[in-house]
Length: 573
Image (cartoon, rainbow, N blue to C red):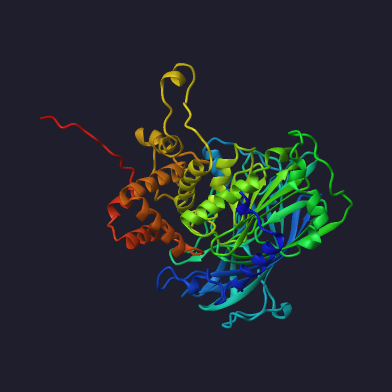
């Protein structure tokens, strides 16, 4: 396996040159920028540039932050108002999510802050300077205009004093606080929990994130009901200040590694030091709690979100993966020390998955990939929040890493149609597990069943059966369904699981129709065409049809728009 390892000097050169040569997001040097590689003539999307300075006050479980957002209006429309997602407000008492829960006879218990209406609080909202046609313009606070936002739980609307005309930019400055909650019974992605006497934080959906204004719908302003997300591509400059005893990582390149993670400390935190530590044994104290703070500085380009995770018990594994295009990907494992003995292969398996997906479905575009021991199963750009122990976490890693292709690089509107990321990633999960592991088919039963019945093939177990069990009794749904419209159900109920299984089944049947070589070439072309852009269902089907020169409208119509199944019958003579 030595091909995965390179000298630190080589890694530093690769990360500081190969990825840095992309330049700024909107520059001609950035080969991933949509204007340099439009998926079709006339296409447009908006650009964002976030600068966030945030402090984690762990005694209060609150983030105190200021955010400058440069927003570029590349659309043909004049914008008189703007909208933002305040995702943590979805969980507040009296909100839309509580109403949905009650409809499903699920009675929500609230955390300590949620009970008092504290999710994300906006302390001030300013437009810095005036809107400018010169999109390279910078703004100061001298001409700042303070505006009063209208907040409707997870959506914030701001009516502008001056509209944003096409081909212009505007800078918004927002001071805010976001509260972590650890009580209640509602699944939150932004998570706080106890970690062996310490606190663990998953900092996700924690900042005011501007809603997408796109070519299909204009403003996407769906209330968050616990399912999916959607964001604009751009750049993130983020400084996170927190107590010094936390070990953390995040989306993007760490710019001040020598300052916050010097060599001597990094060696103490190395996961290999804990290869023989008994499972669940109390963690050691490597960084004492002394009241001091550190500021971690990150920069991310070509991404549509920024997330982080922090835990004093994190121990670090790392494998450096060279890709054929010359880039080197840092594959990083963050494991809580009591689990470290069973996370020894996490970074290596991460590298294997990134390598396989890059070879088969298109080169990974980012400088790192993190798998984190975080009691979750969620995906963010360059960061996956996972759980479990080796080898049980392989499937979860494969799925969440796969999202950095479908959601991360190919940035579909998940909220509108979740199939384009969840279903494609389910396809990738089975694809990688059959190639990277020794997983064997299992019999669903014991005794007589286990003795006399052969287990189903893995493809049937992992993909087909999830679709067929509902299709047989007529409870599946068309794929062309909004993520919140699956019978108004919670979680994966109401047929929502079919965005995973039915979509993956569709892709395997598309492979059968086209043949292996043409299918894989078409999928790779789709990824390349829509990388760092926002495709919808019609864009996917058009990409496949135009590339293959095969009329597949009959195929996509039936799989995406209907619940039709094969209906064999014997005709009498």
